[in-house]
Image (cartoon, helix red, strand yellow):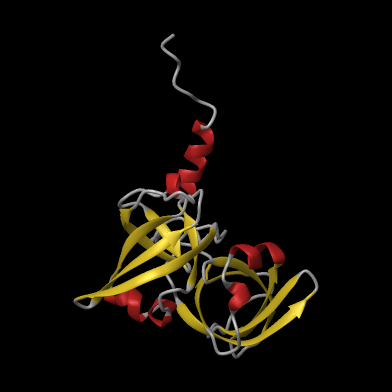
Length: 207
């Protein structure tokens, strides 16, 4: 479990295709990682399979994660958001983030608003019911607040608006993104549970 508060921006140093997935080697800056530890990489929960004292770590990325996320597009030299899993003593400054990416959003626009940035994202079909104004969403692992939630078009895709404060802009890889880029999104897990629990209920007919 994560909180969506990015701790570091790491740089990809190696990418290799392996059976049933991909292997990523990243300069994390963490000197005390353990084998089997979970780290959110651009919001996707990955397991450390090799670690060096200097902070370089290797992760296996499954075919499922490659299909749902932007990790398959990473190349050596690319930058990724990193967060280690929370502990029971950690302040939850963001929101509950599982590290289970729901899909890829397309970055539509970035507009400067003073020192902050307003961004518009087009989200995949099927996620609209989990998005509400002032609700939470994780974008490339960053816990953010939805300011605008549009209606779906004929394809089911829809647009959301998000404000990035200067700190989030300066300390995540979102400042390196450009319109057209694909970003990982994870909607609020509580909303997903509520939707699942309510699915069996329907409004009784008046007849």
